[in-house]
Length: 68
Image (tube, rainbow, N blue to C red; front, side, top):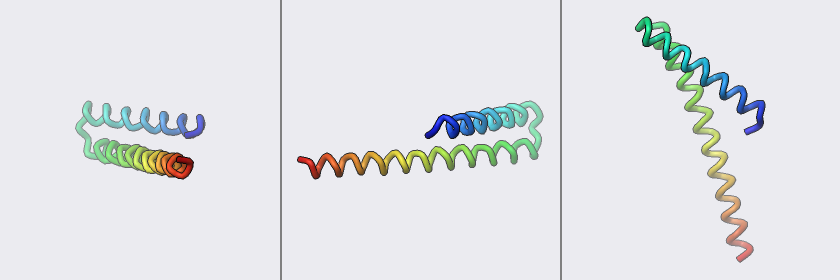
């Protein structure tokens, strides 16, 4: 992840936490909805990043196996 991507992810998590805190203060249905939307975005980024990392690791392993 680039430093720009990391900054965007950080900002997204900050917004998610702010919505979560606001929800727990107010128990507002709207704030719950907002919190869930941010959680989905964060989870999506985590999932995609994990898949990319696993693909990179598989390529490394394949390269090592070919060199052996």
